[in-house]
Image (cartoon, rainbow, N blue to C red; front, side, top):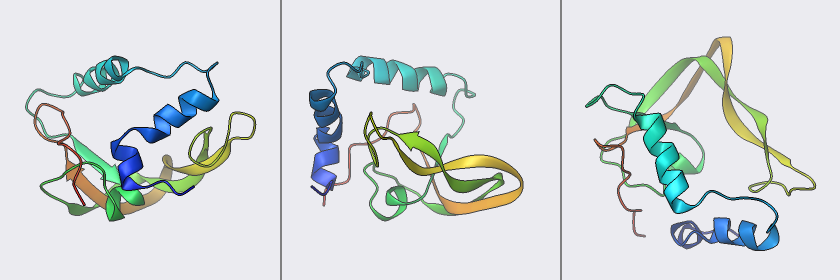
Length: 127
C-alpha cells in the first residue's frame, strides 16, 4: 500500500498504526497540539519559526507555505539515524529513516519555510 497525500490529510497513518498496535499509546490531537504549543512557546513572541525540511517536505509538502528558501544549516548533516516503528518499520522490526544530526564540520542544504505567525500550520495544500 502506497501512502498518499489524501492518507496524510485524513490521518490514515496514525489511525492504521493505532489499529495494528492497540497496546501503544498514541498522542491525541489535543496532546499533539499541546506539545507543539510547548515547543513554540520557547521562542521569542512574534519571531519567525522556520521549518527546515527535505524529502517529501520539499517535493510534496502537506502544510501550506507562503515562502520557501534554499537554506544551509551549519553544524548538521542528514543521516539514517532515527529508528522508526511507523514509516519504514514495525514495532517488532524498526527501520531507519533520515534525520538531521549534529556534525561539527557539516552543513545541510535543504528547503526552509517559515511557519505562520502564531505557530499554526495552514490547512494542507489541495492537489
